[in-house]
Image: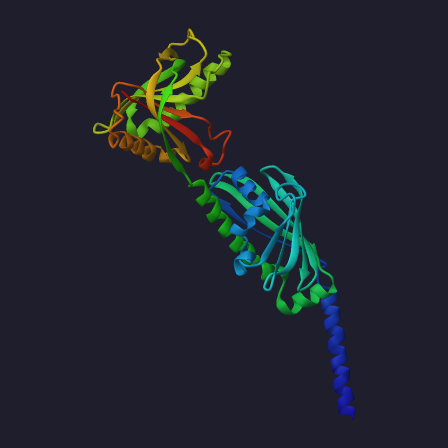
Length: 341
């Protein structure tokens, strides 16, 4: 009997000691994981900001793709929300509390089943030399039951940190893949209206054309802005000669104008395009796909009995938008015009 009392006494001491140990654990938790994604901050921000994108990178939905997802009336921005229900995931919901466009997102996550808890989620997007540093942070309070659970199962960071790492890895893959998407649409025969334009021009190796354009196009567009010249459309490149065997090209960077402009600078010239018949192609995607778009267009002409390329006619690339206003390369739009006889 004394032995039993002694055992019970020791058990009581152990329980009291364990309760004290649990009780003195931190009342709050906070942890984060970060990665660098080779993409503009706005592209990554837009992916995270809309809950309809979460199934593509959520590490938890990956565990149970058949879970039921329910979206709120808003899925992006403040008050955007979604909820989930599944055998593995349990039941819970998330809501966006505040956003600082392209910089940060604050959310609140609430777990209902298999246990009740709630935490704050903070995303930050910091531009870096290699792209965007994305940080995914979780913070919340720990009541006694949560402390007891983590005492035996490990800290919330130990349990959830690997999921954050997996989610960031998937987010990186999804964002990069999205930026690489492109589409080439050969619209067909059309009539280009021509018109006046100002331009600067050069000859160089084909391999140097991108570097040359990065210097020339901003200069001609800035000249138009500085001199209050009304533009008649988006800027374009006029390819005068393309000599692939000799790796040589002659081209001009142009800004269309509503009337003839008399330039006061030697390297800014005025030209006029006469209206011409052309094959029109639209590339939606990164400029790196322009070579394929040109090749597809020329192949289309060569395989058609009704079309014949005018070797002496204009060849144009018209840039409907640009990286400054449209950060995602998958959304860049370029029109190609090849003169036809």
